[in-house]
Length: 395
Ligand SMILES: [Zn+2]
Image (tube, rainbow, N blue to C red):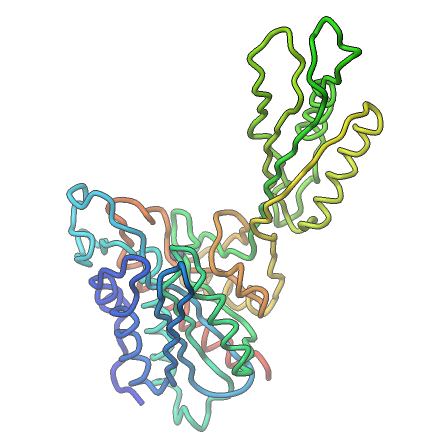
């Protein structure tokens, strides 16, 4: 059991000073291992490899046993610095200037990892007779493969957990969920993404003899009208409306007097939780079939299923975190489903998962930084959340 609680700002600096540009993670994981094992966590190092991909080091740490099981997930790999000379502070310095801590990964997301580590160890040291009084499991799922392809990171760690019969009940991903101000947003889901390639076939011919050819253009006009103008839905209280965007129409016909043999259409859909891959593909098939039943010809369509939409409607998780944010930020966080993807897309298949961390405005940019006071606030929010979670859940 530890006597020293690592300060979240100091720990952020220590982590930032290790240049763990993806796929490197080991030096930052070693720092976490040291603090977590001193605090009594059982450590499992989880290196994974797969032909054609970088070998990745990952770390799983847990303390306690049984339910409820609260997991904190994050990554310690970072994106490259870009032009080092453009930085006002060296990108792996962790220098603090005017109350801002600079460095690649400060926001995304070593700061978040440091805050949760500090909060968890504080919780352990301040719980009287912890090993006797603590009911439940507190764990860390830390990967070195989030900024790259996520092949040898979180998905394989989750499979490993399953093999060990370790079941997560709730998870917080410490990604920088706040766009500009601390406490603005908790991410409770993401829109899905489906990409489509449609080919409309006709028969090539001379424009003087259209009866001897089959021009696919009239079908294209109808297809574009339906794709561009039919609303997929009106949105929900938590998601914006789904949208379908046609991104390319390629006829490849240089000649004025020739009817083309085929037309290629590319489109992409960002969709909310009123749809899924299957329902969207069925809906589009109905549209395309109806047009071709009316106007003849045939088509082929293929899809790339990029990621399903998800929404975490978990009152305990969202409620407790929202209360903790409100207590230290004096405002109720907005529940958001915007933004890009994160490893939450894998973890949500195992347990209710939400994302909350620092302010992400400078992530991936030159001069990435976070406010020192935001780090301090986030550590307090996480601590409050951990206390309330184990006091209330499963009781
Ligand atoms: Zn990240």
